[in-house]
Amino acid sequence: TEAEWEYAARAGTTTAYFFGDDPAQLEDYAWFFDNADNFQYSKVGKKKPNPWGLYDVYGNVAEWTLDQYYPDTYKNWAAQAADGVIDNTWIRSKTAYPHVARGGHYDDDPDNLRSAARTFSDPLWKQQDPQLPKSIWYLTDAVWLGFRIVRPLEIPTVEEMNEAWNNGVAKE
Image (cartoon, rainbow, N blue to C red):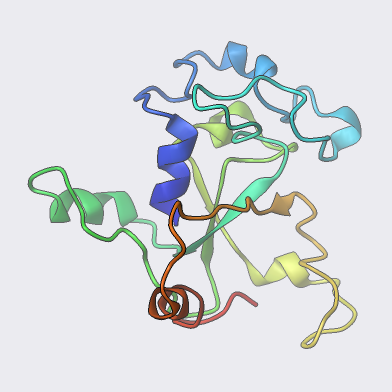
């Protein structure tokens, strides 16, 4: 989920980036507009990891999350969490667009790589796809978009798997 992505990216920190608030250090941790080779994604693991050992949480490619995008998500979470805890932060899909992508990418400025920075999907990401609607291509106009494979510590039940993957509207 979007909240899980941010939790992992921050690695227990509360600053703009997991290494602090100064974007001048970003060069050591991320591929972005100022340092990306030939303005394309780079091999994973070439930069320093966050405090939890995760590489490339900022820059290189933006990462899909399961969540539907709403601009006021943080405000809504704050209102729900009187005691600082929210039971379930997953925002299930109700429409095909927009969905949340996090982390920024190789063509982004430092501000778009902050732990709290968010972006969202757009149908234009598939504008040049020659085989819509049953395409073998993956978002032809969003070459800077990817995903991170994660898994729970314990194998989910079949019901939990169905709830996560067969609920809501699929990303197009």
